[in-house]
Amino acid sequence: MNTIGSARLQLLGSAIFTEMAQLKQQVASQGIEVIDLGIGSPDGPPHPRIQQALAEGIARQGFYGYPSSEGSAQFREAVAEWYTYRFGVTLDAQTEVLTLMGSQDGLAHLPMALADPGELALVPNPGYPIYNAGVALAGIEAYPYPLREQNGYLPDLERIPADIAQRAKFMIVNYPNNPLAAVADLAFYERLVVFARKHEILIVHDAAYSEMAFDGFIPPSILQIPQAKDVCVEFHSLSKSFNMAGCRIGFLVGHAGAVGALKALKANIDYGVYSAVQHAGVEALRLSIETGYKPAALYEDRRNVFVHEFRQFGWEIPSPKATMFLWARIPEGGTSRQISREILQNTGVVVIPGDAFGSEGEGYVRIALVHDKETLQEAALRIGKWFTSLRQ
Image (tube, rainbow, N blue to C red; front, side, top):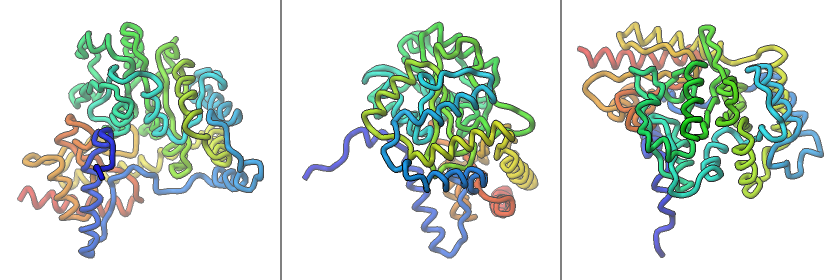
């Protein structure tokens, strides 16, 4: 029999994630207690109100039929209400809101709904892996635009070649950013909307970390820019905002044509989000509106602890304004993959090499703040001692 598997599979993911998982098992088998700071999965449960709503939904007999692929009217209306509360943006719950099984679901499928094989998309480098994966699955050509430290990890729009911009069907952006922990303000979004209008590009903004910001910074929505809905869509997820990662619920809002295109595709490939989860999602959004609930303070404390501990050992890490990640420049003399392996083998702490997110990530590692402060202190102490030994 011929080898099973399409050529597209070779374009997906990064072998480094598999490699780090295997190395983690090897280290653990040696009796070392591994602290995994690799995957950005929340380590706490949802708020009790959300848990209660989920339990109520599970008990409802009417919630066991196939849900609508576009999401319940109640959830979509709650999204629209939350957008007005959070960003001052008005949305039509029927045409400008689509429920998803997490934002990754939408990011994986939206390229198929927006463009045809051989057309072009602008994709960030470094970027969250699903961006390139979704584009590859759709047979779309990716143009990786660089995000660099000297430019605040914002795209230099003027340096994108004019012929590339004219060909591009859409451009993926992500702020607050994973893996870079960078943020953007309304002034940047204004420039981005002008760029999109000039070149007739749809902006696809992944805003999954908008509720995880620190130091008084409040991430805006690109849809706050006047007429942005003419050229923009925006993804959100309840995974990080409300510790609902395992529930798999998120949404897409904005440009009615793009929302409708993904809605049409989704109607042919799935039956939507379990109704009890949508019921809990409504409660999560109401909780935010009624109380201003966010998990950000927890991660701000963790960030402060980890950055402080690292600095005690002379490893300077920027203190980000948002997300659950740190983006750390590695010591000179090694590659991102080499340093990540050495950290795991010598300290038992898992971090992800920056080049797993694209070539521009070389020279950095991503650290996820997904444990309590005491565990993070222990991880920082282990890495700090190893780092000190390198300098001796």
